[in-house]
Image (tube, rainbow, N blue to C red; front, side):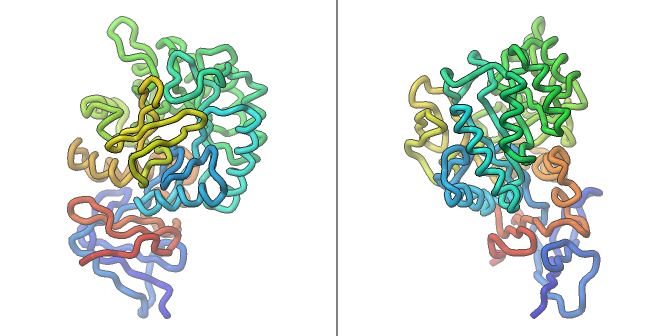
Length: 381
């Protein structure tokens, strides 16, 4: 039985551009440069072939939470997003008690070591009560470097990112600590000024957590963090492209100033992603999901999203009118580079993992492959 597959005839999005009628060869778990004569051939004429999506900010899905679920729950959430094209997922936590968060880090690190997830992103508790969003205010705390270090140690080398309100006491020192340990320091849920944000960037911060959301608005006299984050080439900006979190003009502004090489599309998904409307818990807080929009029951703040990256992809191309190659960069290559995984994922190049997504002419999912195995069998009829 042939172990090699030739996916032929699609519009293939490569780092060098779009190839009409191109082909990608899969040999075992990897993309190969050539195929043996007995390779299976799949005709993808009329379809797009793009790299698997990489999500650096995802709290769960399929009814399962990465912060509170069991191992089986977490795997269910990861699989839910794989069905929608996300072949690489960083599990993101929300604010809970520090001891519980350290314990959760231990569990998630085991799944990262097994390759089920690509690491851990701690969003909270080191965030501003002024911009807490869907985080429990009584559990928030200043970013004491000693406590930040406690979480990093609990993650056993699998901590990929920590979101901080860097203007809080200990914030800049915590950024330096994270940079020294190879962990991404992300500025988010912040009430920082422009000047304070610049200071954090100089200290080593490299990501804007869901740009625009949970931070002061852009002002002409007090530009705040948004201007500082957009203008600095060292910063990758997360964007939630679900039509709820951002006005299309805000997304266009970010792409204009940062470019696809500095934009990472994320889901910020919570349990309801891929599951449906209803009542959920996000950490200790109750959330009502109605018509796909998640809001806190108390206060009504937006509480993450129910987004999947295939929807973000389709919206970016069909509504926002972004070039397909820019969308692929923002949803695959840029986040892969940020995580230090671009040698393995993020593009369709020989030697990399065979993580790929088949889309039809309307940008709907028609097949998903992860490490050479079909997660979603091709549906080409």
